[in-house]
Length: 324
Image 1 (spheres, rainbow, N blue to C red):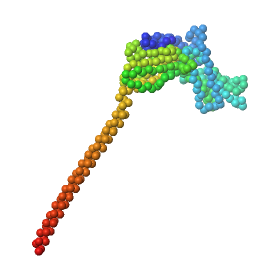
Image 2 (image 1 turned 135 degrees about the horizontal axis):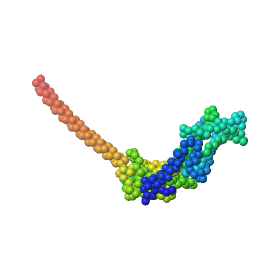
Image 3 (image 1 turned 60 degrees about the vertical axis):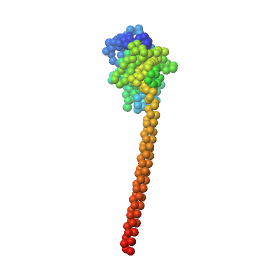
Image 4 (image 1 turned 135 degrees about the vertical axis):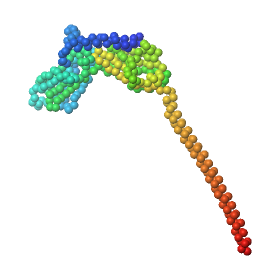
């Protein structure tokens, strides 16, 4: 169980590990038994880790109760549903069934437990490949039916930061891990790939060591380092943890900016101020010019008025002389 590093390409790891997974899958599907089969195509002496889990159903809920079970590797799993009932209930038996996908299996008639307080139904399965993962639901044939669902899943990937913003020429580091501070899970291998909308592109640090580097601090942690960022590096990046029973992945969104980008709002505001000042300036010039034209017009009107008055005075004087 090892992770990609700088001396091995993702394709090498995939080829190496997928061979083992394909062998398991081929052996499992050599059986034609239904979901309830334990598929004993492996060595009978093989001992799988035993895991049991249960859901206690209180009363008669109208919605399905759900519980997740995390499996890192093949295991023998015992699932149990326990329906709490009232002692005053007169029913002495109940029909139950289990569902997984479109398959129905393990029908049985159950009776109350010794204390007459619960109806319990169990289902055991040896989970050896990813096709046996999924949902397993116990169904009590009441009216309405009562259900509880177990969700089998591989350990989930957590990303340190889902969104990163960086600048051209900088270095970005993405971190993914499975587990938490107390529980660690070790995937068979990790895969990093990007998706810029045109499709998935697996990142290969061996082919481009000057651009990408993988860092492994622990088996449950992977880091991708991208050097000399450009605007073309803006994309979604995915880390995928591959287990024998399936895979999980996490997404990191990277946005690469130029150093002029933060100045754009300032430049826009500056441009708006310049335009506003220019408008005010032209308005002032136009207003002053208009006022000057108004003054000239007034002076012209005054001169014309004076000329008119002088002409009227001469005419009046001539008239008076003639009358005399």
